[in-house]
Image 1 (cartoon, helix red, strand yellow):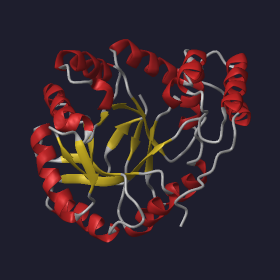
Image 2 (tube, rainbow, N blue to C red; image 1 turned 90 degrees about the horizontal axis):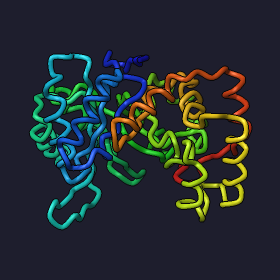
Image 3 (cartoon, rainbow, N blue to C red; image 1 turned 120 degrees about the vertical axis):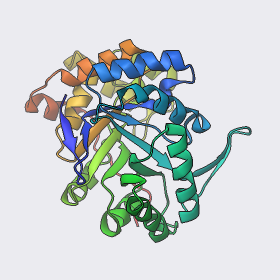
Image 4 (cartoon, one colour; image 1 turned 30 degrees about the vertical axis):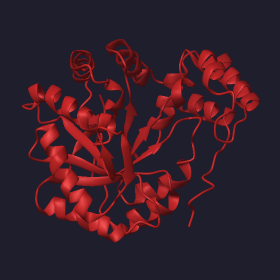
Length: 303
């Protein structure tokens, strides 16, 4: 599998496993983690908020047997105070919270150093310089190798690109949700890599697109009303046999791409995703697919 290199030299597989959907059954999660490694995935993405810490524990435990493979990269995210018992959480990007949470995440992951640590959200009103100071301190102390943010807010992304040493930006990005296109040139100029989450748009860009559309998207999606979405999916299905391969190829066409973050609830689902990733489309096929969908733009959090 193709690997892409971050500014720090860390190499991540072009498909990463989003671990949020692993669940809490360790034995079942192990079948997915093992399949991911067999398929060439080296980047595993988790967060302290996923299952209120349990996801980090499971990911750390199941990747332990691959610890001698120095190409395995683990990323986690921070920024939410949470109560495991009440399932309540609230936003806190303070230095104090980040420093404390990092140590708790390392303990759950059973690591001495985390490869990639990301801010799990953020607003323009946050004390961003304090947040950046926390990540820089963690780097100085050797607790993390590098850091990034998870955000779809242009004003937040712009600030971190100009005022920090982030190396990754996780954002919702697919053929249907192509809003990040407007930001990619700036992101690429800073040498930052995009971690694209939601590549199949909650199942709309899969073989089950029609079923998913009728079940989950009666209210439409972003700038698409239900009628628009129905027409667009129908048009794509009439011209392409594999919508997942189309969106994967679309994402791979951008220089700023670091990794496509795909979830999996079973080993088979993961294998299917990898097969879709490896299916190659021509540049013309990708351009034509892009011409079928709407040109979306961010309309909030611009300044």
